[in-house]
Image (cartoon, rainbow, N blue to C red; front, side, top):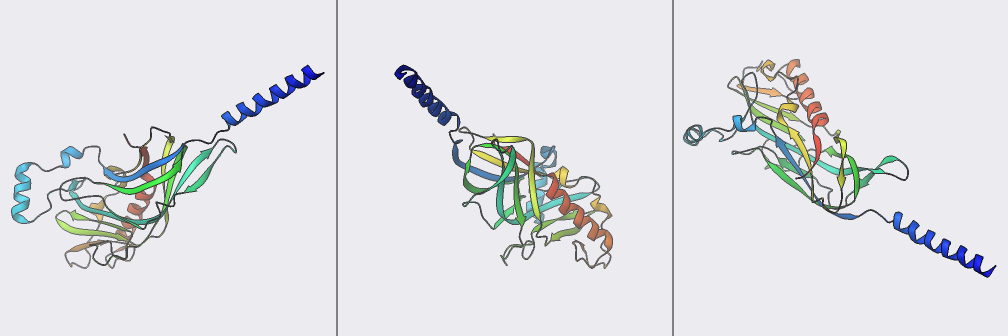
Length: 253
């Protein structure tokens, strides 16, 4: 009887020990979150040395993204806040929302410079390990009066269409969800996560050359409150929606 009780106690002991091992919490660590613009054919859009020298003489931008239909983009900025992560919880078999106290914002990011596409760090946040499907944040109007183009807006894009200057300004306060189809695994080897906004993707199914300077002031205004025309308002909404729905979540290499 004593022997049987001892065996039961030993079994119970190892059950607890192994149960604790398999129920150990997943690793948590500091992970840097970055945001960038990319382009499938970025090299072909970078100006050669002769074009750059000419730009220095004429005062033009050294770098510009050349899209189709004579559209050139020279500026791309966004303002947002309230970053949240969606992590898969194996115990309840669904995604749960996790906030990082270090990544609250607001953030103002400049994603095109005079020389290249840009990557900006949003900071380092302490998050749990596991599989992440989405990162969410809320567009937020910038309060920085000195911030060219982005002041009182959450999205600012500028450039030229057929040689005529254009600006796209939007004051949306909608939420944006950046997805990874397969999910991104955060483990002890993960140092960074990346929000990738591809310029070809945000111009998908958009013909910016259709925008008009209907009041002939030398500036094509593409915004939800433009005084130009309805076409420009529709283009502003489509651009905003493409930015919202076509960004991708990646693990930084």
